[in-house]
Image 1 (cartoon, helix red, strand yellow):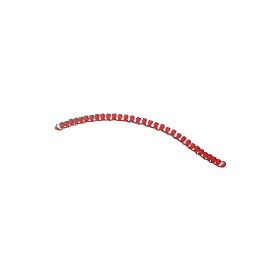
Image 2 (cartoon, one colour):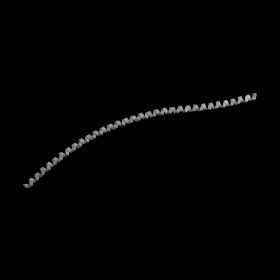
Image 3 (cartoon, one colour):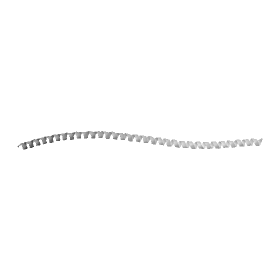
Image 4 (tube, helix red, strand yellow):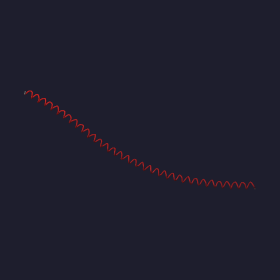
Length: 118
């Protein structure tokens, strides 16, 4: 009977040792997972900051490009207006020159006709 009790105690002790070993192993794995999770959370936070910095830089670059485009469009509009004004001036000068040449030609023709009659 004493041997039987001793065997039961030894069996219970072996079972307890296995449970403690399994518990220790599980605790180690949990700690490893928590450590990995902590590293992942840290990288995630760094990534969030990187993404926010990129978004901010992208937004600033976009604003700068929009400002430059607006300035370019205004400058282009000004150049187009000056070009049209120059075309008007050139057209006016051309019309005046054609009118003058026409008058000169007409008076030249009259002079020739007078000479021919004389």
